[in-house]
Length: 171
Length: 354
Image (cartoon, rainbow over all chains, first blue to last red; front, side):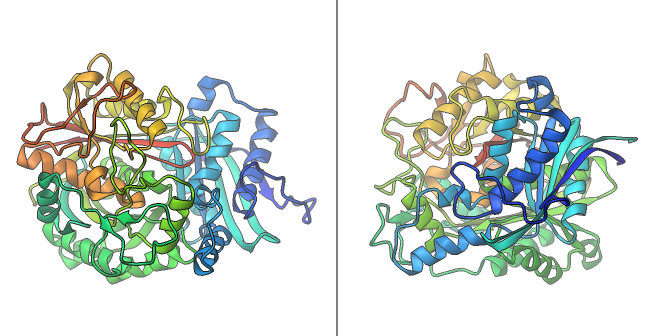
């Protein structure tokens, strides 16, 4: 299926490679969620300005993720707490699930279409585009915010992410 | 058509569909005090676990092989068949997934779904879409989650797990889930020679867009998923003969899901037989959708609905027709299976039985 790129974004921004990730409420252990949220916000803001989307448009907008791996920083924090017989900080449970970061984006922007979180096999950009094409081809959305991410392994190196807002081209 | 021609499952009740069915009809939870790791520091102490510490990828390889054997797939068939997975997103999950496909003689891994408790349903939906609308003749879907010390500690610290080790979905006095070991594999085919367990007729996926880890009280997310699944299948709510609920016995989530069932199937929602079998096999997280697909298929094959176990009494926030006694037969050949995950991802599968 042919897709049209309505708008795109990347993190870190090409014009500011040292940019600091905006903080995301409730996600303070790892840069995984802030990375996804930052790149998704930039893509949506470029196209729509400020949130939320009108309900009818939000219902036809899918949100898909293809990441090269999960949130290694949060998983390590949980494992370390367990190994050290310490209490696991309460927010780490939901932070350790990739769909939670997408849920933050969907809540802020009113995206109520399909939400699909995946690990990329191979190139995450290709995997994210493929997932976007599938949900649009299935008739469940008219457009998809597709986030591809290569998350880092420490809060100081958050990694790289790309977002594309796709719509259907020729079928 | 996406026919389920192979099905294998592993839960704390043991290996295979027969063990699962025997456990379900016993109405006795597969729960016990955890011995796999130390729980002395935790508020909760129980889970539905297999003996020892099973190897997830080894078990998945066995389950995939069994499902492919059951579907009568030759080595050449397998080499032409993709794998769709539902797993927790770890640091090396993608490479382990590729190794798993190779070990099973399958063509490739297409996708690893990671949306927590909704991962299996989204994986089945992807495979059904491929089989129904593309040139793929078949796809294998597999998923698994085994209880480990880190997972248990994170759930326990969040105060989610039932402290008494009893999961009471939709019940008065419910206090949360009990985690469970679970893994399963299915083969979905356009046609196939093996008699099907079920057909995946519809599916739905919607983001609730309310809160990252709290449900909207009106259940708008799961209701949207059910509505999409019904529309895709061309089935109306009055034809649903059983609904296997996500319900984890979390007070707010169960109430929201009940509201969703009532509204999405209105005016029939209050009369559709409903149970959450997580009270019996535990909450299998990423494997939930596949394990509960097996539960639905077994229920219809045996003509008996699994009970909503451990129910203490009605909760006015959950006005559902719960399956509280054994021996109740399905009212039709259509079943819905719901699962939702963190981030507000809500999913539904609509299964048609042979």
